[in-house]
Structures are given as C-alpha cells and as structure tokens.
Length: 157
Image (tube, rainbow, N blue to C red; front, side, top):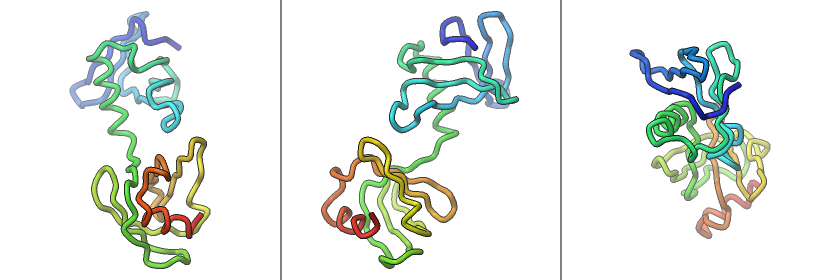
C-alpha cells in the first residue's frame, strides 16, 4: 500500500485510470473508492486495482496536486451517483409502496419507496433513501428542507 506521495496518475487510451507507484509499477484500470463517502468525502480515498487490492491510499484529497486531484474527482464522480433531495414535491400515498416526486441537485425525479425501512438515518441528521431499483437519494439536512417537505417526510419517519 502506498500513500499519495510519489504517485503518477493518468488516463489510458480507453479512459481508465492508470497509476504508477513509487516502485515504478503501473496498475491499469484502478478504481477510486471513498472510505467514508458521506461523513468525510474528502478524506480516506483508496485506489484499488482490478483484482480488488488496494494499491494506494490518499489521506486527504486536498493534499494532491491539482491535476491528480482532478483525475480522482472525475473517477469518483463516474463511480458514485447519489442525488441529494432538496425538496419533496409530493407522495402518492402515505402507505408504502408509494411514489415520491422530488427535486434533487440533479433535477426533478420520481421513485418508488417500497417501505419505511428503506429510509436510513445516519449520524449528523443525514437520511439515505433507497428506491425500488436500489438507487440511493440523500437528504443532507432535514432542517434545510422547506416546511412542506418536512411535513411529508415526517409521515414516513
């Protein structure tokens, strides 16, 4: 396992992330994985080889040179998809399954909530909501939601 110092990152001809470590060994098709994607997204990032072994560890994303940081941020964005709910527009029913209509940081969306158990509370007041297809939506702060959204959400919590 290497730390971020003495690493060389690049995209190969197929657009995959390639890492050359301090010993000069090149690892093709590495994947960036956050250790704590919600509570500490800028800390603890592993670069994992195609066979699932960690080949590098990055304590702080901000400690990397800008070019390397941009490559890793792009790789993480490609891998992670978790829209953040900013407003609940409506729900089809207060019994589950129900269809939710929401505004997210990526635009309007609707999804089916199978059951109340698909809403998980995380430390810091964060909620993760899994839809019927396994896509996770995040509510970063209940207090940041408007009154109507909080009222709808309270029926499921």
